Amino acid sequence: MVAQYSLIDLNDAEGVRKFAYKGKKNGFIGMTEDEVKAAMKSTLEGLAYEVHIKWGQKSGSDILAVLGERRLVIEAKGEGSYRQMLGNYFLNALGEILQRMSDNLTSYAITLPAHPSYIELVLKLPKRVREVLQLDFYFVRPKETTYEVGVLRWHVG
Image 1: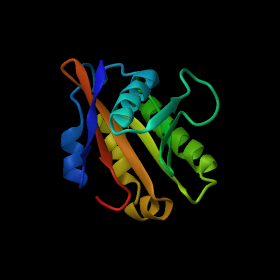
Image 2: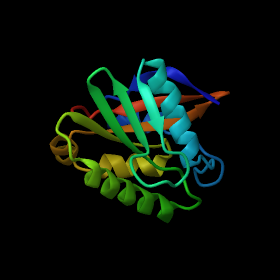
Image 3: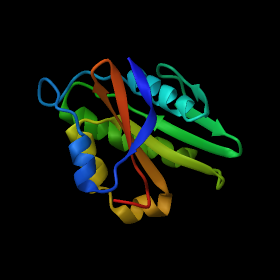
Image 4: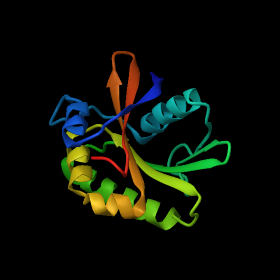
């Protein structure tokens, strides 16, 4: 699958919830972390970013995107196979991105499959926390033979 070259702005909780995909069993479609990374890579490259990916489970930032002076560091997670894993992956992603927030000139984000449980976990995170951290959330969902990527920016929603 190849990602679209634009981001869909998800401006509020209802927009984010509508962006969730309807998976097969209990909302799961089996989206892997590398699929999420590939969708983000294609999308960001389509927006003229130079994108560096750490495929698999290598240590360090999963995605580094550079556009001129702008740097974007993104932590990515896949789906797992049951709901408790989603909670664990979400908390793990938060911890990892917090440990990487060392540069005031860099933007930081987390990207996840658009599974309804991930979306609810993000929406339960207080907006104040997202604002203080200036942390964006990207959601990836399959659409026909491609992916769509939506973003909930730290200053909206």
